[in-house]
Amino acid sequence: MKKTLPDRLPTHVAIIMDGNGRWAKQQKLKRVEGHRVGIDSVRNITEACCDFGIPYLTLYAFSKENWSRPKEEVRTLMFLLGLYLENELPFMMKNGIRFNIVGERKDFSKALQAQFDHVINETAGNKNVLLTIGLSYSGRKEIVRAARLIAEDVKSGRIKRIDERTFKKYLYAPDIPDPDLLIRTSGEMRVSNFLLWQIAYTEIYVTDILWPDFRREAFLDALKDFAKRERRFGNIKEF
Ligand code: FPP
Image (cartoon, rainbow, N blue to C red; front, side):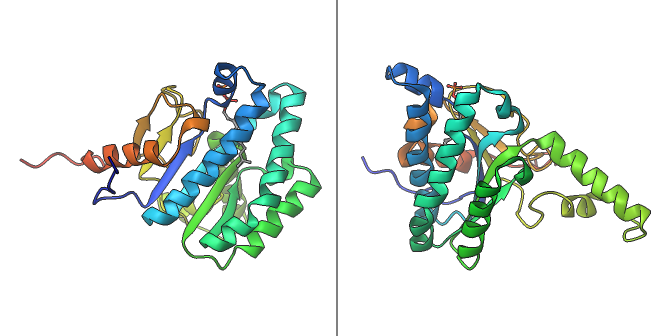
C-alpha cells in the first residue's frame, strides 16, 4: 500500500543517526560498511525532504565526543566525510539543496575545511532544503561558546540586553527555526548533547530501525506520528 503524506508536516526535522555499527554487526560486516550504507540513508532522507517540501533538515553526523572513538574509525569517518562532500555536490545542485554545518569546524583538517567551504559556497543559492550537518558538534559547547561571545560583546559595549532572542543570535546557525521533530534511530532514548537549546519544545520520535535501514517509508511513519501530536508549547489544554 502506498503511503500518503500527512496534512501537517514539520518545517524542521533533526535526526540523530544511530545504529550504523549494530547494523554492520547484524550483517556480519565491518563497522565502516554501516557508515557507508548510512550515507545512502542521508541521501535518501534528504531527497525525501525535497519531495515532501520539508525545508530544514539537520543531521547529527559526528559529535565532539566521537573524536575519542578508535583512531582507525575516526580516520574512516573523515575519509567518508570527504567522499560525501566530493560526490554529493551534483545531487545537491540538482535537488536545490543548500548545505551548511554546525559544530567546531576548526577541529577538522584544512583539506576538509576547504571542502566544507566549497560545498557551502556552491550551494548557497539553492532554495529547496537547507541540509545542516552536525560535525564535531556538542550542544553544551555551543551554549558555552554563545555565553563567551555574549560576554565579549557586553564587555565591549556592543550589546546591553541579554534575552532569549539575543542568545539565539550567538548560536552556530541563528537563522534556522527550532526543530519541530527530532528523530532518533536504533531505539536509544537519549538526546546525546544534540541541539540542547533548540529542542526545548521539539517533539521526539524514537524508532528501533537502525540508521542504514532508515529510508523514506520509515521517515513517513515518523511524519505521520508527528501529525497526530498536539503541540502545546507549555500552554494548558483547552476543553
Ligand atoms: C552512529 O552509529 C553514527 C555515527 C557516529 C556516524 C554517522 C555517520 C554517517 C551516517 C555517515 C557519515 C555521514 C555523512 C554526512 C558523511 P554508531 O557507529 O554509533 O552505531 P552503533 O551505536 O550501532 O555502534
